[in-house]
Length: 442
Figure (cartoon, one colour):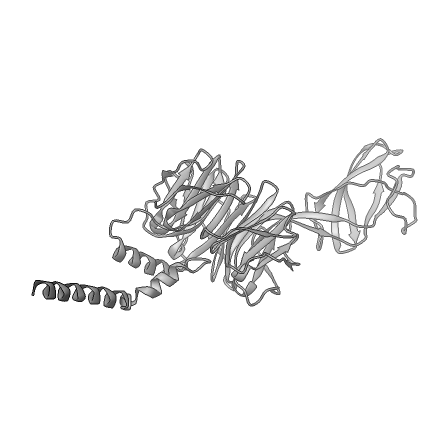
């Protein structure tokens, strides 16, 4: 009789266990699935993740990390529930920062001695003590901010419906574009080659005197109305600095060095000899390559928008968008390095550009979603959904080097790549091939 009763108890226990395992988890499977999706975190997704965490592990102390940046010899990682982790020893150990808020951070950047973190409900926080304490910036937006970048004393933050700008160390922000859907932003150098350009007549103050000559017209080719300052040294035209960009190709501050110049009235002559043999010298340059700084953002439907620092007026004020090269894929991350911009996204998508307006697709050798990419140690390293890809030939080709780790963001500093992911997992690598877990849930 005891055996029969024992059997019934065991059977009831097994039945209850199986029934529980096959239940619908009260709808939590949607939250779990949402937490595994790559790309920018939405406010709804974050709330679902938090509910799942509270229901499953009420005493949880490890939260998801979505962004990481390097500056002032410090790595700063940010994530869910205002989580901040900092490292001042090249990622070997990590301390707690105090953000003072319970909202999630989606990305962080470093500029001008401060870190800038953006995230849920359009919140922006800055830290001038390497992530130890944070202050909230002024911005009235409510849409989650997913990316931020800084350069030339300008900071740009982006969301799925806005591009905002700050020129006072990220303290105050203003709306600059509400017609783009951008997930991530980067700052870098844009190079462009112009057509044949003609330097105007250089009138010397004496008989071929050395000196500096101002307001010299620079016309022809793709630019017009530009003026330059010309330096003559040793009876040679040694350089031309643009002082008025005019319109088109030319930018104030660009320096054009003339290898050789030829004088006289021969407009068809290529500038090959720099010797000044006449008081009025005319020089013709076959090709002019100009480098300017630019913000580039990438996002939904392969969208790409950029704002070039075209002096004297455009400092993140005006934005141009180009026809998507991958219109069926979302682009989640973008990096700049070695005169190249590389963006990554859904299904192993990788595209490359040297100016932000013309792009080409690159084979990534993975079909996994890619969330972020960084440049350092003469290589690009991209991370994503159980994948890491590495390029050692300036983005020409990539190889998949890891399929074990699910990583949300990656950055480089002091010879080390640092990548972050769920459960506060933090990994370091010197080459993108081999990774070491240095922090996170056991």
